[in-house]
Image 1: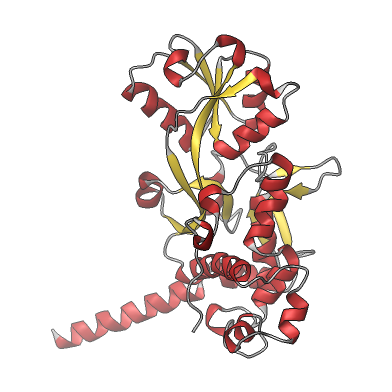
Image 2 (image 1 turned 30 degrees about the vertical axis):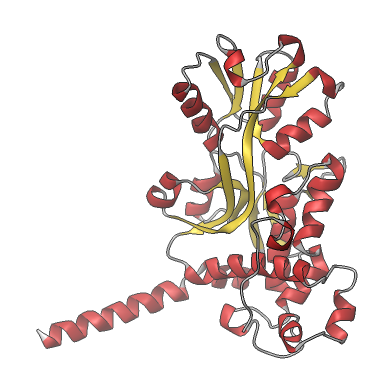
Length: 338
């Protein structure tokens, strides 16, 4: 029995070593590039393609931040892979992408049934429905007997179905593959309402020919935390995601920006800040990253507040609300650097 126990323990150690050796972190570093999820259209504020074919958005900047953490800069080391909502999980499991940063909600079924692992949330928001003002709807129940457009393969579809059932609302649910198709159908009046996550919904209203023709109904159908997603069982790769987010909040909390990060690194205010920016060793090796990874990341994209303002706050005039740091009434805070 003792001999069997020893063999089992040895096999367990070998298995653990095998899992560690097969971390996606090692695969990405050996490849020299990061394959990060994009979108198959434009998801306003999070993943958009501009007139020059360049990607932008909060999710895209997190992809850039991750690439810069790994390789010192994103240019030449980041590939944005366009995928639909429904393609996220198969693409991750098959290895076609390394990580999902695609405004993806943390849900029970995804966490327990799809072999996915979530980072700490990087965005928290609510789901709302927008309706044509001419219909006179003041709440979702007023759309009873009407129709609502929704993107396919998302938690949004389930949230809408659950809300309608719970509240006894009879409405036709019209499903489209792409977010662009959902918006086009709504604005062409193929449906009476459109459900989206709050920020892109408000952005869609702001970009309408006449925003006053559309009303975002006050009902909050659900709140959802959005996280970065990797395959389950890869603690090393998940650690990188969590500490990347923590570093973005730490930089904001300490006033470290894209513009002043060189100056702060040259004369850090404390030993802790010096360690954070790689002046002294110790903030990279245990993560499998260079010690100056946080410096490179802030140099690439700035802190979390800068990312939010650049992609959501300034173009779409959306408040940060609960996505502020805890010092401003929000839910985000950095982890301790020791």
